[in-house]
Length: 360
Image (tube, rainbow, N blue to C red):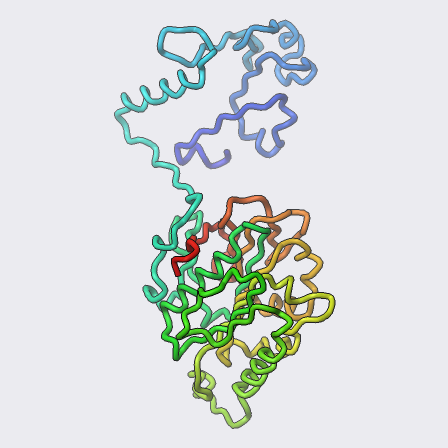
């Protein structure tokens, strides 16, 4: 409202009474008309004139000059009826557009309700940017996540919001980017939503039950400890991360809320090693339900990951859960739509790519 006129954008709005319009917006609304009000005491022009505006006569009202006016029916087909006014108004707009000779307004570009993953760049298209997983609302361009720079990625959402689909997409993109010798996956999948997603060439372990995680997580702790730099590592080796050899390990966990329970968390042994994850070649991609996420945000493993600057996507959920990641609280949204929380890009609204089941 404040800057629109300079861009050729005009704002027209209606309200039942002027008090419904916020004061900071009302200051920018210089042209006002009042139709028949439900309560003439709400008039900001003239209450006496407002009381004399007849009832049952659509279009009658008063102008800023405190004069009565009668609004015209917005149609050009010669009729005066308002029974099919919506269709008549659409026809009016079409006819005006057809005769308009000046440059037209640019089309309003919106995020698609559904984004097939085939419309995203493949995993190996732009290796310096990372892997694409969504389109953003600002530019309708691909959004990338670079796990070489940011080793933690969190996904929050309610049921059917697109959490598991996003995990499938990231696995697909990463396995396209890296050969199996350079990239291995530990997949924890309580509800079998990631079954057969990871190619055998890239799969280190598929863990369908969280109560079977202890052995595998102990092996992961041992791996991270062995790769942690010692005093003998030179400065050049630290810059190049060349003091260890082996594949980068991606720990993918779906339904984290079924893993971290009141009886314990198999990942707790990794908490102290999280600050070294980027340097020792271990990445974490974790999805959990927004239900109870606010209360669970102080769980040590997840809290430490957030303190280290974890990025991620907040999909649809109950706003009552409060802030779940980077000051963002979930809200109702279409499936696959969410807020991307990133240190580099801010918090744009994005539509994540859809990977149909059975196509991986």
